[in-house]
Image 1: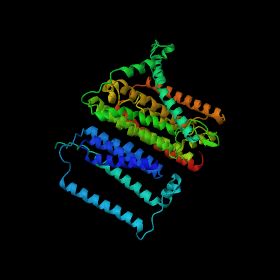
Image 2: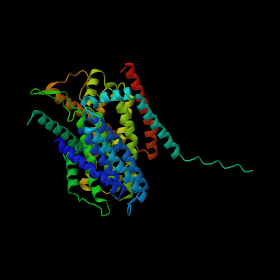
Image 3: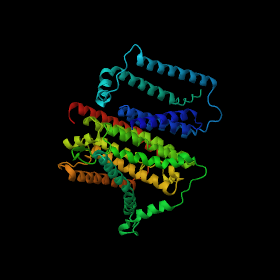
Image 4: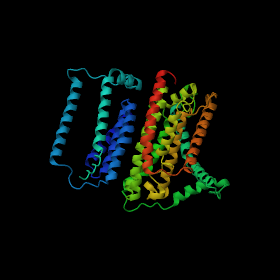
Length: 174
Length: 338
């Protein structure tokens, strides 16, 4: 049963994420991204992290992507004709993809039989809400606060950038 | 068949039966209620007090011609109504509707899905409801529909923040996202309505916006946008949007009474066993009915907000109030007053 659900949603995540980057219509691409995030959330549940799954849907699928759609509809972005992106963009994207894949392979290789012992599987105790909160607000409090500060700086920066300069006062006639 | 599987199926049947039967009843209540408030008879021809009218309405919806305009974006156009119904139906599954039962040695909780993250799951699924409106408006290829869905997306985001913050303030003193624990907490103390009256008012206002009901029905605003996001829909597809609206009102009311008004419990009444289960369900339904009546009452009493007023209320009034409420509740919990 669990395997069937995993195969279904892993496949869905793969297919929909390919649609995200290949579809010509930005609205369809965004909606497929919603599907991708939802499928990944289901995978989180299967891994025993329902909290993460709920937050993923609530914040990413339920809020951020709605804003994406809002902007797309407001600006009325049409279908993109012809091949997408520049050659440089394609090259850097390929480079990034290869680097990421290499990192994943390295990670798995080290876990399989490398110098480090294999990582412990997630236990129910580890992913329970209380344990998560205690880790986050106990051991990792400083890191948590720094991330909060970073987000605050980003919000202030975005506000400053989005704000139009006030209209200049007409200079007094001499 | 194991007892637990049978119990789950029965619980699903109870929840679905409740939600689907709400729609015809609410259509009647809305039409008769508006007639009462506007001093006119309303539908009174079919059956006593026009009670058979919803049946006739349903038949009409089924047999009308289902028009799909030529210029629509077909896949999204056909998917949108169904996607509206799904979150409305699934969110109810985390609402507890009675005390625990013991059947043949099995302890059975009267909630379809008893999840540790119950409240969050409700909010997460409910937040997906906006995609139905956005897809309907975008795919209709109609200026009014598109304007409706642009409004819907901005409105939902703005009010979801206040709604979520109000809900979090309830969760803090309870110490759990599980709704049955929220009910247990209120049975041990007092209804959250009293200590968290500010949070309740924020929740109430935001839930009108989340369900697109007047005074916040900007996405369909019939005086400016024809019918907003569902202008191009007809027959049963149009009726599906209607059903989704009433069912999400019911689910959100269920969440509201569970968080603030004790859910299936009544103070001073000890409910247990089978009679307790039946009474608990009836009490919950009664409380939901009161909330739905308020929805109808407000709809026919207040005029629609202007769009800038809506945004100002959401961001400059409700959100700061919700944050203030959160801080006060957290401080009171820390001091041990709650």
